[in-house]
Image (cartoon, rainbow, N blue to C red; front, top):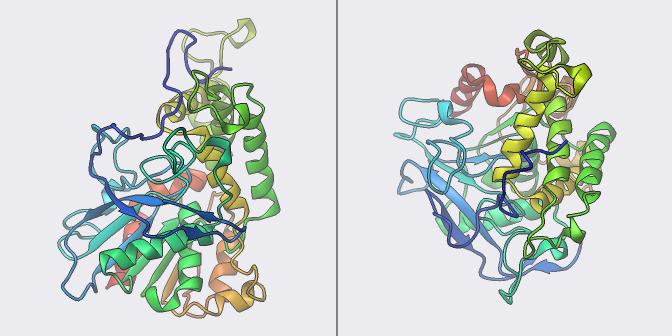
Length: 379
């Protein structure tokens, strides 16, 4: 059940921490405490971000790319010092690609509460003595977007030519268009929703229980100890991975086959179990359990209509030309949610369908279908 071999010694967290190679990251430090929707404030917040291309003198060519739950600011480029994984949308960002960096200035922040350079549970508290851990405040997507808006102010970007995001990034893209319609020039929403559904909250809740039930969770205050909830985080990732893919893909790819010479009747694994173990082991090496909890709770809190008279009233605020696309095999964010967005956003075209066997992950994998949507909005 462990995510990694018992003989392997892992760091307490896979988060980026002070002293690690910076890679391509830059940092924006908040000049004042960030007020939070749930009450209170977050002092000394900062965002890590990466950019590609050059900002035009009138700042008219800026594009904001927002990542999903376990993504980060490293949208494009190879893995290397400071970046444990290659760019998660590398095929879309660069010269001649859909987000042509000879034309567009692409900005990708690591989300507030994340663990790859932005302030999150693994970050030092204001006194610098220990990590935030379990004391890190509750965040909502509106808080995260408020921090991103302040970053845009610092960069001199008053209006994005395009805001694009999928899954959790799509939630923030919705919030951008509702909270700052005058700053959102165009909008691309991929495999996301106007509000988290009961089923999405249920799946997420089981993952939260897996992490919090790990005896090494320690109320979230494990960062300054020698024990970490790797097992709980690995279980959460296994469950999430099943929801990210489709049953037909898993059946075609693995079927009932055992893993190599292992025999499932005698302590061995099926291939699909080995696949889940692999993804669990990868995540615990590059992510932080505390961030997983904070970001999952933020996703559960997503409701664009909260305090705005409901979804219809809230989404009526959106003024940007909008494309909404879903994946036909997505069982986590089904097409009905994208149809709702397209129906309620005044500037939305008909919902587009990404054809893919890969389920929810199709918005990351099917770049040949996503690229034309980007080009359609940017012209």
